Amino acid sequence: MSTHYDLVIQNGICALHWGLEETSIGVRDGRIAALGVPASASATARIEARGLHVLPGLIDAHVHLRDPGDAGVESIPTGTRAALLGGLTTVFDMPNTAPPVVDAERLAWKQDYIERAAYCDMGLYIGATRENIPTLAELETGRGVCAIKVFAASSTGDLLIEDDATLARVMRAGRRRIAYHSEDEYRLRARRALFSQGDPYARHAAWRDPETAFLGTRRLMALARETGRAAHIVHVSTKEEFAYLKDFRDIATAEVLVNHLTQVAPECYERLGAYAVMNPPLRDITHVEAAWRAVRDGLVDSIGSDHAPHSREAKARPWPETAAGLTGVQTLVPLMLDHVASGRLGLMRLVDLLAAGPARVFGAVGKGRIAAGYDADFTLVDLGAKRRIENAQMATPCGWTPFDGMMVTGWPMMTVLRGEVAMRDGEVLGPPRGRLVRFFS
Image (cartoon, rainbow, N blue to C red; front, side, top):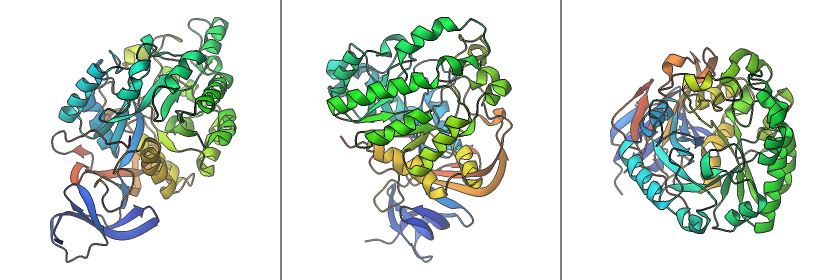
């Protein structure tokens, strides 16, 4: 076999699945060809990574790129550029767009669009509705589809499915893991009258209280057990849910958001106002500490941003009309690197949560590891770099981040997508080269 490589990444500290090791990586035809490449090896291009850590290409498995929708807020081109700038090589996009991705026609449009316009690789969720249940088994095997997404609360249009009978029908339609937004819609409706127009933004956390989330997760776990359908609970946010999910590891995986690890109520509402409003809400220190315990215990399988941009005008509305959702695709990796610097988790655990974990949960082919035969996706980071997160850095058109002004230690310096440098030192390089991720069916 030829010893010539298209690219060699040399002298970096590489996060291999058995640990950190200083080594060199050889890339050929967009895939990892060899580790431990000698300095004498022939290569078309080289990256000198001395002083940097070379991670598998990092994945944000929970974004809302709003496409189709409002390009003035976000789009696939702008959102995937933001992902590259933030150190990500792959994102999985949610279906609650306008119109939503719930049928073969809309899926085909988005598949074609991604392969023309995306700057990083993408997976797609299909939204479950009452009407499309008969087609879900076929839709879930579509090109680039990572999972079916069910909104058991807090959705728009016909994506809301709140009753047990319909949820069970969805679970019996197909075989792959279903991702759930788990809050109890009936409790939300019953409690709405307790709150008034124009209440402080902190009342959002009182309305969508821990019991609302816990009740939703209990109901979904009972149905998952009854139907035998594997579940992925996104944005788990309460100590009660973490304790409960320990008994469902045979059938359920769990995601935590960087927001629920980083922002603490009530202080965040006092400081950020509407820019702290999201679903499920940011919670007090008891639940933040429980989330960190779940990360350390291995209960959490992945960490996401739930990047959900809105215009400043939509955020400025009084509660509860203010748009719920925060930006995050460009800040996920810097924030998690800062947590590494602070000693809250190790670098290898971060790699598991942002690369191997999402790939494992959803069955992404060739993603999540630095190993021969895998896609040559890499995130090169400087663990000692100190940077300030600022609104002006954001590639997302809405132009804001709830972390504006925050100093962090650790920063993504380069992203490599299938052997080509896609971002270096804060600049996106080259044309859109994103592809649809392949998934085990």
